Each structure stands twice: as C-alpha cells, then as structure tokens.
Length: 407
Image (cartoon, rainbow, N blue to C red; front, side, top):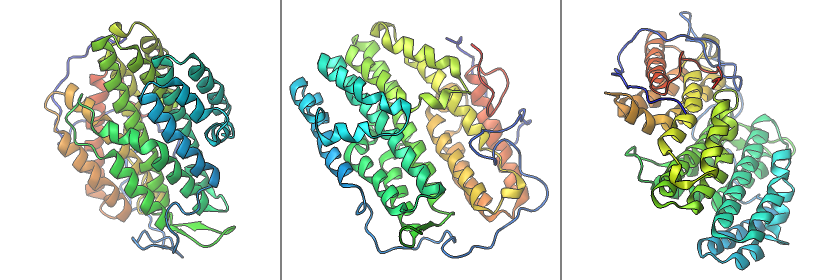
C-alpha cells in the first residue's frame, strides 16, 4: 500500500494549474480546459429541450419485464433470509426461481459467472458465504442496470422498457443498499444517494418520448440522468465497502469482509486503467485476515481512480459548451466529486468540501449555457486544482485524469 501523505492546505480560490494530459476515454469532452472562444449552442429540436416537462403519459416502472418483477420478489426473500442467517430459505429464494433465471440471462462473460458463484456460496451456507452471495447478486444487478441505461442512451427501440427495467432492479433490490449507504458512520458528508437515484429515474423517464420502435430521448435530460443513477450506485458501493471494512477489522468479522469483497465487483472496473494495481491490493486485503484490514488503505485505492475520473470532467472543451454532451460530462463530474468528498475532507488540510460541492453544483449550468467563458474557465480551474490537491494527498505523483498507477 502507499505510504501516508502529509496533507496540505487546499484553497478553493485560483491556484497554479495542475498538469493536463488528456482525458477519460469514456467521453470526448474530458481533460481539456475550456477555450477562450465562445462555445457553440445547438438549437434544440423536437423534445430535446431540457425543459422539465413529462414527454409521455406512461407511469415509471409500468413497462418493466414480468421476469424482472418476479425476480425482484425473490431477491427480497433472499435478502431477508440472509439477514436472518437462514441458508435453506436463501437457497430456496434463488435456485430454480425467476431470480436465478434473471441472473442467468445477463449478457457479459463476467455476469454469466455470477450465477454459479451465487449458487456455490449458497450451497456452502456459512454466514460469510451467504453475505458473499448477496453481494455478488448486487454487483450483477448493477451491471445489468448499466447495460440497460447504456441501451436507452444509445438507441434501443423501446426506451420505456429499458428505463423501467432499471427502475425495477433499483426498487426491487438495490435501493435498500443505497439507503444503507446513506446511513454509514465513517464520514460526516451529508448523503442523499437513494433520493438522488429516485429523482434521476423520474427525470430520465419524463425525457422519453414516442412509441416503440421509434422512441426518442431528450438529450439534455436522459444521458445526465443515466450518469446520476450509475455513479450514485458507485458511491453506495464505496461507502458500504469502507463501512464493512471497518466493521471487519474492529470485530474480526469475516461476514463483513466477505460482503465488502463481493460489493467491490460494482466498482472494480472503475479502477482498471486508473489504478489497476489497487484491484489486487483491495481483493487480497478483504480476502485475508479481517483483523488486518485497513479501511483507510482501501479508500486510498478506490479514490485514486475516482479522483482521476473527477479530474477528467473538471474541464469541458470549448466546442461542447452549450451542448447536451458537454452538460452530461459536467453532471458526470459532479457525481464523481460527491463520491470523493469524504476522503477529500479528511485528507486535504483546510479543504472546504461544502464549497467544493457547491462549485460542482454550479458548473453544469454554466456549461449548459456555454456563454460565460470567464466564469467557466475560472471555475473549471478551481475544480481542477481542488481535485489535483486530493490526488497529491492520495500519493499520485502527477495530477492526471487517466494515467494508470504502476504499483
């Protein structure tokens, strides 16, 4: 693990610029400061206005698949059985039910490995194995949600069904995880993970229009809502991992360690390419002696990747100011900024986290308007500087939005 870095004073006023060296490969908008020329503003057409009007008369959740709805009833039974330590009831809630069928039809190779892993953990039936089964299920469901969110954004025929599938999984299995994450005790930053996802799912559904197979989305609303849903789930996973790691260490609790390790699957791919060595370090620690777990070291490894991703969205290129793509990127940066706020508050001396979050709240609207270049550039620079200060406190040698760690 990296040595402890002595934190230094962070001021959210103008500071010398950190190195800018490219952007996050997830978006073409990341990693370059806003230019000195005016941004371009596309004239909205059709339903792409960003106005908070409901573009359809459908109820959120009404078009979820019957399989999802049934699977989530079994997921609730599984969670209840595991909480009660009833291995037989947990197994009955999964094996041969629509929940197992639901998991088996997930698309990616990683997801196809979830069903045998869940079944194996249930067969072992120890409290630690039951916790692993639940965490593995939650990780698989998050990836399933991400698949459907991406399909809605990129062009599936029935965007209502895709969005409602996400809502089905959220309300049926994952909202309880977010509520639990909202209540953790290891930091003092105000949380609203569950409420943030609730609101984003409502807003995104309102931004869908048309009828299958020609449904359309409001580009000002649906892609940003996707980012809020997705990254808020990462925030829930990170919050719970640190809480569980502390419980495992303090109480020599193998159950907490097992659940934390399984939940790491939700965010594991976020470390790839940013802090790849941290993956093995986290996994080894959570799989080892619970008394030897270091929650602060786990937070460091997670937040190195998250701070780099935050940095990637701290500056929007000038041609995307005033466009839906630029606005979406600024919203994505805001979600990552909320994720790293507790660590920044603890590790950067003098950090004004309320101001940091407040400036991230203001940034997307400035990017959306795309006209006030002086304020956009000044605010962008402050966000870059604040995020670079946290990267330095985490032991990152050179502030970057994307370079991978080597050890």
